[in-house]
Amino acid sequence: MSTMGYVAIGVAISVAALVIAQIVALRRSVEDLRQLVGEQAEELAALREQTVPLLADTRSALRKADRENRKADALLDAATSLTGTADAASRLAYRAVTTPFVKVAAFASGTKRAAKEIVSPTPIVPTSTRRLKSGKNRKAADRKQIEVGSSQRIKDADGESKKGRFR
Image (cartoon, rainbow, N blue to C red; front, side, top):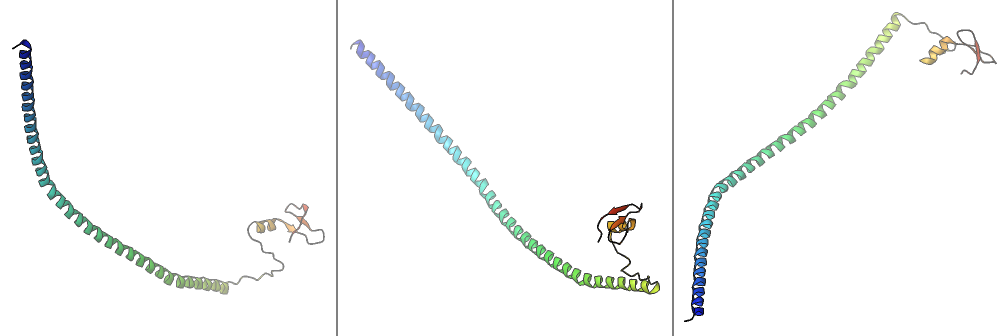
């Protein structure tokens, strides 16, 4: 055999050794992967064992909370109804009490005036000589004297005459 033959056989043996080494490495990787998948399956089973009871507890807690919410809604509806009833009753009581009370107070006030008038009557002043004014107009009328005549002059408290119109 020639040198080329030996080289070819050497290369073939080297390639075969590399292929076998790759197959062995691949087999180890597959074994490791199987072991990892098995561990993950065990972890998943343990997680499932823990979460299923938690979900059941959560469902029961939600049901209980729903019942409590319904009770609270019923109580709130009852309180709202009672508030409306109390408002209506207080309005009715207010109407029932205030009207007679106002009438009694007005009657008492009128009776008091009549009693005062009977005890000490006030003299009656003819309205044609006395002009009634209120507020600022009354004060202004007290300070000014009005001359009645065609010139329509106004005399103030100092005695000065001024032209103006008065009604």
